[in-house]
Image (cartoon, rainbow, N blue to C red; front, side, top):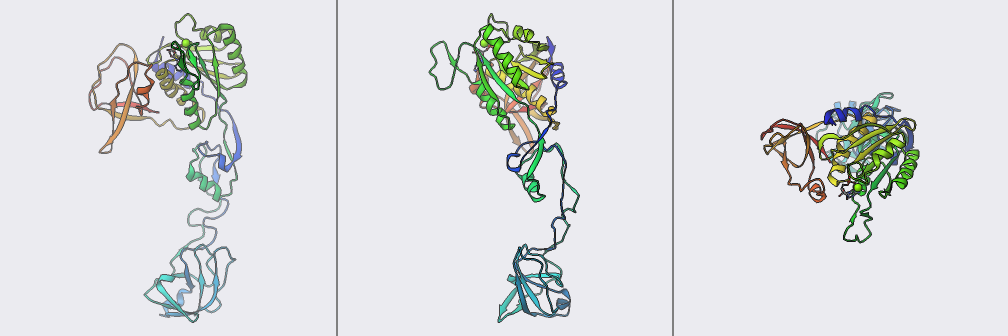
Length: 394
Ligand code: AMP
Ligand code: MG
């Protein structure tokens, strides 16, 4: 049996790139950019008027002129206008190009217009209310970086530089497989000896957050059927996430089946709780990574976050942002086991505190729903109130 840090290191060592693909801009939310993005023109692309009002030449203001004959009206979206006489003004709207011979914009709030003449109502400054060409970014400057996650804000930037198709990292094709003769579907009424499957659905939902839509599969605890179905799943996916069937039970066939299907065992069993029977391996020929989680709902869910999410983060070349929280309960050392404890976090005076939740063992998925994540407690150490410990968020 190996230690938790060793197990994690072995998992991360198998991180894989899946290449890139071009997708429509509006489908790229939450995906990872696979290229740097550059400004295709200056931003703004012209001296942009920022107030509705009149545009004048500053010489007139400096000569203390206070009323201006209106020569023309220009809307946003019309080609650049012109002021013919520097004594006069043109009416201009927010978003329009600053007209030729103008360098100052005075907003309607500061003028009164009567009979085609605009008169200042207050003292105004020259050369204001203009967003200068190229003052945000110049053509060719980098505006977004490769390996950035695309949020709604990045969608706006991609749109403004004309990226209608975005090059993003490809995501792995994943199958979620539950095993166990006691499991029935959510829409069924379980018999007294049966339960509804929940792991597959919570992992499906968790993967949707990563923009991955996995295949769902349930396999009965029958060796021949299992062998055939796992073999099929290996053919069509990059990653298998299995739950159940890897412990020491009489019907826990998965380890034997992986061996028969030439999935190389990288480790089986880790000094950790929950999730001691975790099995991890790789089918080298088909380049398929196999995470086989013990079936208890909390084991599956916690180990998915501890191992699979960190593996995916590395595979997509994202930064693994480690976070720490402050313990608000003392915890005694235990043997050589790394523990994952469910916590609720809350922020107090800028610090994040972790409150331990009561959990009725690793089958208690209803307590899991109250948790914001787990803290990772390394073995053989006492923890005191105020200690900083690693936190993995759900
Ligand atoms: P196993 O790892 O197959 O020994 O399963 C351990 C426990 O987890 C058993 O009580 C199973 O009934 C339960 N379990 C296994 N798979 C699931 C699942 N997909 N949803 C909910 N519970 C499960
Ligand atoms: Mg089972």
